[in-house]
Image (cartoon, one colour):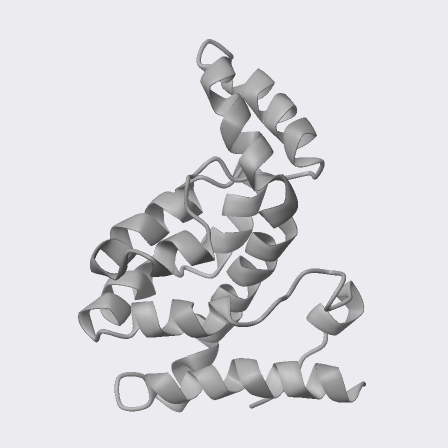
Length: 162
């Protein structure tokens, strides 16, 4: 493991400090892990996000299956996000962060959404928002670049305890 890996892992787990008092330590992973995955997807999609969004008006008459194929091609990946939001746009609107985050998550292609739903993170959005933590968490996660050029897949898959 590299020092950069350890530093990134420590940074991510330091975000969990925000959860103290509102979450038990045993619950931190239920928030930190899905947000890490969400940020990774956000970073991976960033280079093609505008291309996907610009193409959306041309897809109104397509079947869901055809839309899936075309947007994956536009994203140059096996998944895409058709929401106007990304982490930067989410934190730019703190007053509507919960609704906008749900919109962002629902904008992912089916396969990516299934991965996110596995974490049951939607259960935590309201709880985090009610505790005034959602904005702070997303703001902190927006500070870390988890693009594969910065964090190889092998590092993303490594488990580091807090």
